[in-house]
Image 1 (cartoon, one colour):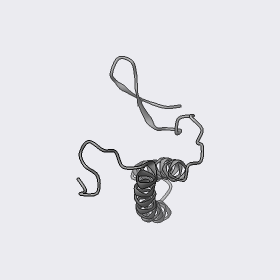
Image 2: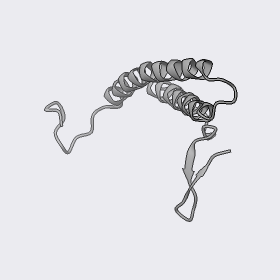
Image 3: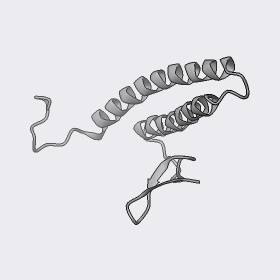
Image 4: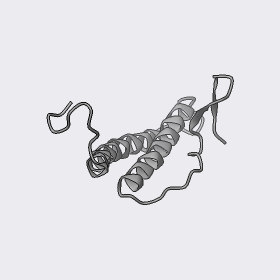
Length: 102
């Protein structure tokens, strides 16, 4: 915990927004690299290669994470964001299992 804010005091929203922006930009940089390598891998695999599905899963997960990161950055700037789920994102069912969003 920072010495700037006592344990019983909440940092101002602007400080939280700046933290979210920093995290969002760092995540965006990482996701760009991961997505780029996934695309290079896909380009190097033959159409019938069984590993293509794994590489596609990496690419799709990276795309979903990039969308979430863009939303984080939008919120951190104080802009409004829609409430629709991210396509393909995992979500809990009422029975406690995890299902895929449609």
